[in-house]
Length: 208
Image (cartoon, rainbow, N blue to C red; front, side):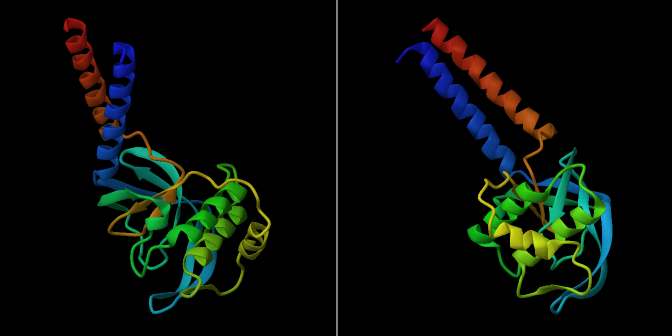
């Protein structure tokens, strides 16, 4: 095998290892607010009945800003908490049970259909409610205006496009879904480690 090919494979392996290490690390998630948002009346069996603010959650994930939605109507949010981890969407949220691949696919398609950073408050509220209705249909219900969530779920039945690439955040408070893994400070450290390893390898094969 040529040295250049070896270097490419080693580089790929190092970056992959850095990515795995990054995903396994616990980090802090801050919830700054909900914007744009509407107020909805909801009921979650044996947990909560009342009004909530629904829309795009403004998060800071491991120091990086990200838009997200709640996939966990069974826990109250925390303004800031460490101990969060990345999970595949199908493996979130936590108790009373993960959503599994079918619901995860539905959530990813709802996001692809409806999400925009410029969406209106009503559109954002509708998407959040549609996500909750998808994740927890046996526990969650809307008492009043669903802001178009029902229409979104009907449209989903005929949607033939790809879903969005999403990842779950699971931790002590609510679990969230965001569109990607933010490149936080620890990510850059791991990538720097990978680059350093590649440089050392290059020096070794050059001397051989």
